[in-house]
Image (cartoon, rainbow, N blue to C red; front, side):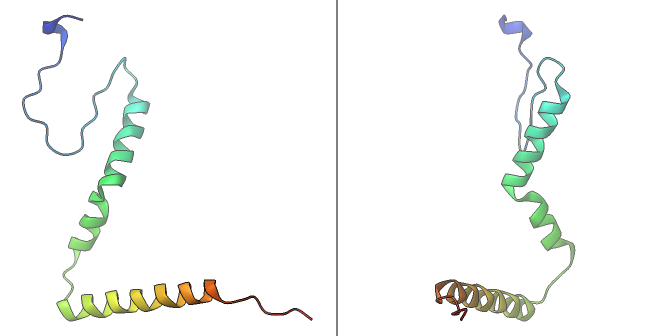
Length: 82
C-alpha cells in the first residue's frame, strides 16, 4: 500500500471505524462496541429530560442505599434450612 492509497483523514473526533475489505458487519460491531464503551447513549438518555438537582440528589442517595443493602445481604450467612 503506497502513500496515495491511504485514506486522507484530517481530524476525526468521536467514535469512528474504518471499513476494511468491504466488511461492513465487522465495522458495525466495532462501532457499536465503541459507542457502548464511551457511554454516549447513556449520556444522551440522561440529557433527554431535565432533572432538578434535588431530584438527582434523591435518586443518587436511593441508589447508594440500594447498593448498601445489597452488599449487606451478600455478607449475611444463609438461613438454616432445618
